[in-house]
Length: 187
Image 1 (cartoon, rainbow, N blue to C red):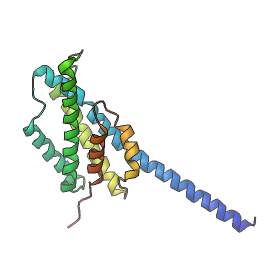
Image 2 (image 1 turned 120 degrees about the horizontal axis):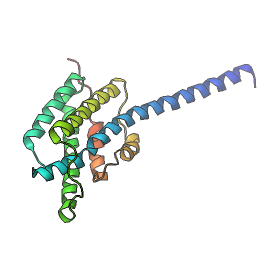
Image 3 (image 1 turned 30 degrees about the vertical axis):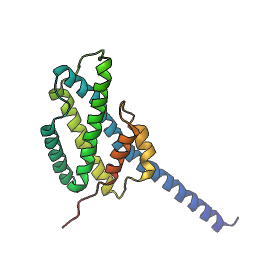
Image 4 (image 1 turned 60 degrees about the vertical axis):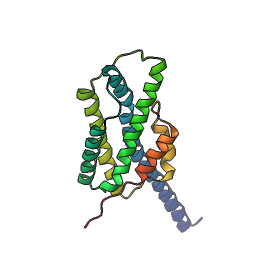
């Protein structure tokens, strides 16, 4: 092979290697976001346990409105379209409630063996809010860098969000809403 042929092979190899590396970074950044979502949903057992012990209802529409408004405000601050984030935040809250309801249903026939270890107001909610802020920021950064959440990432998403009482259907809905998030348009 002449020197030009060798250079073409060498450059083709370097191009393929850089594409593979950049795709790996792309998946890793997305996986970081999915991991934060997993952490957030992992708190739902603690929420359900606290509410069961305190005899509080799982559904708190007033609280949900506040959470949604704050999330949309943070999204706008990060450069996301508040309209496109609304469905995602609602899907997160619905997945969280579904997990809690499934725990409650389980505990009706077999009460939990433990009592709440964490306080809802001083430990759980602040952690959930912090994770929500991180998710919003990372999603915004991800989209600003030109990436998108494609169907090719769903297997990673599904594997990463392995929270007990979160169904495949919950994951599909949540991922579908994540794919809908857009950057806000400049006026």
